Image (cartoon, rainbow, N blue to C red; front, side, top):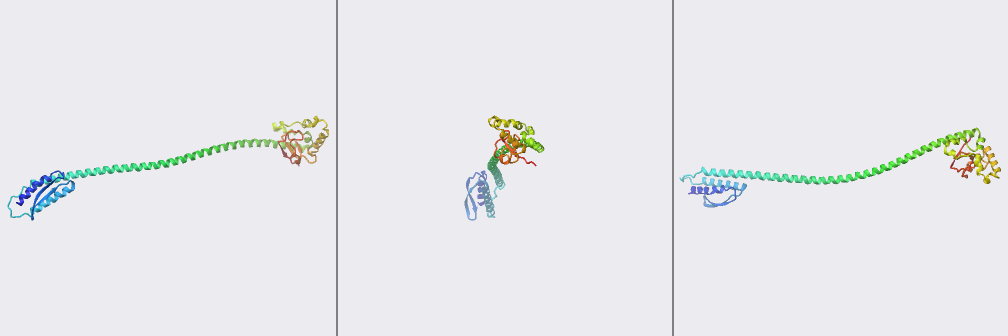
Length: 297
């Protein structure tokens, strides 16, 4: 009877084991030492189903070993059932393997997508930071460039002014050289014949100054034109001036020696004290633009 019950249980359990892991449940009777007992079979998917199938097989094999030896009942057909069970187990394992592979593939794909998204987010954050820093640096460089351009314009203006001043100083230097040459010639003439040069009133070397020399005139005609009453009644003053010119005295006070050379007429006709009081040349009455002190040895 026990053998028949085991055979019936195996026949009834075979379709349950081969249900493709759909999770169906069933009831069966198991013969043991304590008698027959009802067992509920449930075939969950994946690994739980495989573990329960292994437990059922171990229980069946244990019951078969504990069965009475003296029974002479013919053994059940054990050739077909183990083949079906092994086939079902192999198909279940293959299916579970495929499901695990699919699960791993899906997880790998999700991880790859998550890593790509994380990398894109990091690149976006890094790009924004770099853009902010680049904008700040570019703004600073533009400000530096504007300041440098402004400084360049200022330096160019300074250079132009310096060049103009240089040209002015060159012209002044040339004029001073010409004036120095004229003064040197004048001093030589005065040193050679001081009375004649003072009486003449006009230094011949003044013609080398161009426009300045053109403003000079003959001392006699200028003095005559400058005298009050058209030259009438000024004989005493003219005689006094001529006497001072012959003696080399100042035309203003007549007591000191003439040491101031009036510009631009080049008349040596006043002392240092009278030079500060006179606004025009006492000889030709031309406006005084300046005076130079002459030291006669």
